Image: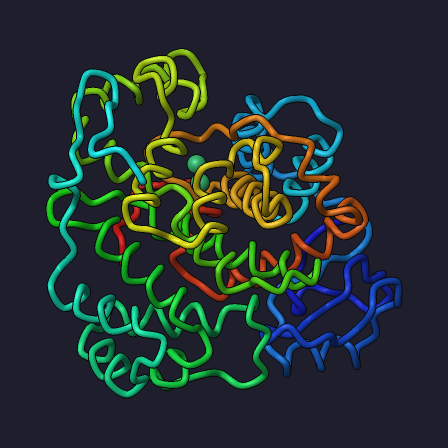
Length: 93
Length: 289
Ligand SMILES: [Fe+2]
Ligand SMILES: [Fe+2]
C-alpha cells in the first residue's frame, strides 16, 4: 500500500482503503479501480490522502522516516500486531 | 478517599500544593458541575478565551465526531461536546501550560490520542464516547505533577531515556518508584473524576490490569500507541511503551480494520497543521497552542 494525494493518482490504480471525505463520509469503497471521474470527485470533496495498492518508490527521505519509526517501536515488544502496525505506519506517513 | 499526600520519589506532594487553575477556567468548571448549567453562560465565558474556543471547535470538528457540517459556533460546540469534554479541555489547557511550566507537545499528543480514541470508539460501538474522549485527553495528566515538582529528576529521567533507550514510564518507575499513570490516578481521585476516566488514566499502559471498562481503557491504550508511532509525542521520549495484547481481545476485529483506522487517523492529522509538523519534521518541541 502507499499513500497518495488525488493529484498524484493515475487512472487504473487500485484503491486499497475505503476513501472518506474530511467529514468522514464514505466516497468510494476499497477494491475499485480508479478513473479520472473518481479523481475529480475526490479533488472536489477535498480528500487529502488516498491509499492505493502497490509499494512506494524508494527515496532517501523515506529511509530516514522508516528508521525513526523503527526506533519508536524498538521498545514496543515483538507481538505480531505491533509488527503489523509498524509496517503499516511506514506506508501511511 | 485519596490520601492527603503522594510520595513521588523523595518528594511529598500535598493536596493543598496542587497546581492552581486560572480563575476564569475555575469559574466555568464550577458552573458545569451543575447538571442544569446554562449553555449560554458557559459559551459566553469560553468565547472570551480564544485558546479555549479554538480547542472546542477543533474537537467538535474532528473526524471522530463525523459531523457533516462544520461547526462554527462555540455554543453549538458546547452542546455537542457535553460537560465532560468541556471539563477535559479546560483542565488540559490550564494544566498542560501553566505559566513557565509548559509541557511542549502535551496538548497535541493528548488531542490526537483523544481524536483517535473517538474514531475507535465509534467503530466498536462504545456508547460512553464522551467520557472516553475526555479520559484520552487527560490520560497523561500525571506528567503535570512530575513537571511541576520534580524538575531535577525530569532532567535525569530524560537522560536515562536517551542513553539507555528505555521508555519514559519504565524510567519513572525505576527512579521514582511510580509512573505517571499511578501519579495521574491520585490526581483523578483528588478531583473526583468519573470512574471510567480514572480507569483510563490508571491503566492506559496496562489495560489487562483494569477490572472495569476494559474496552474503553484498551481503546485509549491503542490510540496512545498510534499517536506515538506517528511521532506526535512530547518530553523527548520517542519510545512506545510495551503493547498489552489484552486490548486485541477487547477490540475483536481490529486487525482487519487497521488500514481503515490508520487512514481515518491520517485525516485527523491532515486537518491540523500542528499535528502535521510532527509527522514531517519529527519535532516534538512544539509550543502548546
Ligand atoms: Fe502515558
Ligand atoms: Fe500518552
